[in-house]
Length: 99
Image 1 (tube, one colour):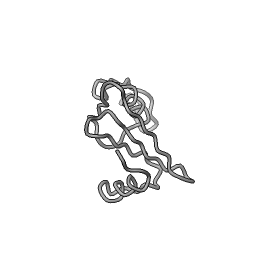
Image 2 (cartoon, helix red, strand yellow):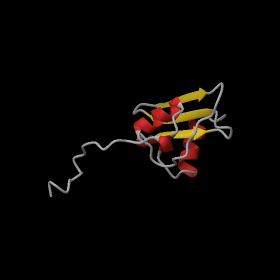
Image 3 (cartoon, one colour):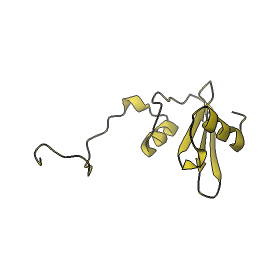
């Protein structure tokens, strides 16, 4: 967790094969999972969010794309696997009754 903006950008390029300037949020946890860093390009510069828990750990069981809600749950200490989302309207969803 000693890396700054340049070090985290290097990790994104080399290890994750990603593009730091894409506008995606990149999340990094330490081995003990009590410290989190988030790197985000905001159009005119990078922003880093850093938080160290005094007690407890972060649980990141879902690796890959996270929604905004998933990130909020992660920061609040809610297990992502235990979340049950209710069905909501989606313009891409076609009901059998409508078809």
